[in-house]
Length: 485
Ligand SMILES: [Zn+2]
Image (cartoon, rainbow, N blue to C red; front, top):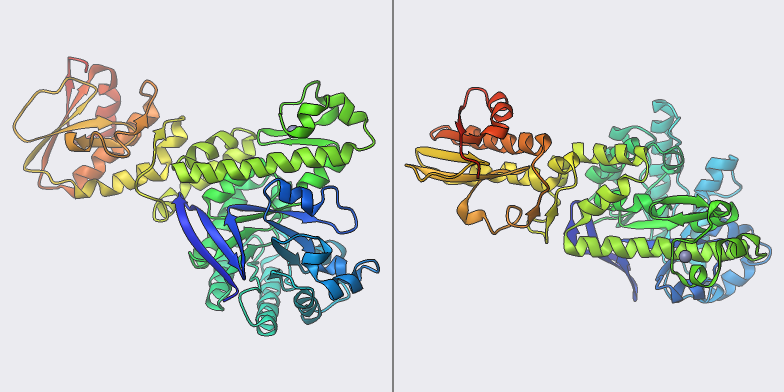
């Protein structure tokens, strides 16, 4: 198969993977900058110098171009762009959604992409906008699936991408994902989500991406089509997205906007530049703003910070600290925080993808109580072997008694001494206890009690937390331990 995808490491539903296309290899998560052949602000050679191994361009624009059409057919894409990495082509589906009907058929644009030597070929799918009715979304999805089938027959292998459509309807997205996986597509873009991102509708985005992922095979390489702002990459990777394409570095530059992972600034508002990339360390903010080369200088900076964020995410996956990066980035905008909280509502499903041991667990506030590691810990409490009698000590001194002795660490809950050094108990760092984490720990006690009905459990709790714990664990024996730990 010309296109293969291997998962190397995991964190939450995010992964580091290797996308192999003929002889070319792309480490994911990866960013494919969009290149407009007519207006390249940053050249493919400069991109290569930044460590970029894949780009995306629009086959429909090349097909219509008097300047490039014959040349790209003669020389091929890699020669045209003088780029030996992965080159993906888009079909014009986006232009179709913005400008209405375009004068090309699915078969024509697929054949053209093959003729110019594209590494990843996208059929002319129909990007159903979020505002579309269910009936329209269903009809367009049927037509998209027909075109996918036609494109796959023409290409004949996994270089053909299988976009997942379905509008705003999660059941349609899940069905589309399942059908795309059953048809044998390996590279699967999730399409028509740009309007959601432009309107900061991250909560719905999380639901749609999750639905599509549930349908797709875990071995599919997932491309979030049109996601270009670095502040949302960590969230998208945590949901299982592997590839991003970005026109944002150039579009934002043309509007005088300066990207950072913490948000976007208008260049004119900045006195100093909060970055040490080659452009920012050799120019003052005002120099760039007044330069004839402003767009290009800004695009170079924007692309560098975008690439740096992808590298930071890959490191976070290797370390097992992706939740912490998602949490940090989510504070950039309240709507992004809403998207993060939506992701936490499906932690029990994410837990199945997540790995068991990580480098650390830093508690960052009440959202941390719903992280997949906490869900995992609660679920596995049923495996603890307990006798007839057990005592749990919450923040008070342990007295040796008959039966099993368990300690308590929020937000996880009860643990036996032998787990004190293992993940997550041993590697979790907490500030002073707060109500949210103690509540979460009590959920652990309830799970333990439910899975050990034969064990008589007594809870000894410090005076500080006695009222809260007694209220949560009504019906269990909770004693006030006078001596703080
Ligand atoms: Zn910079």
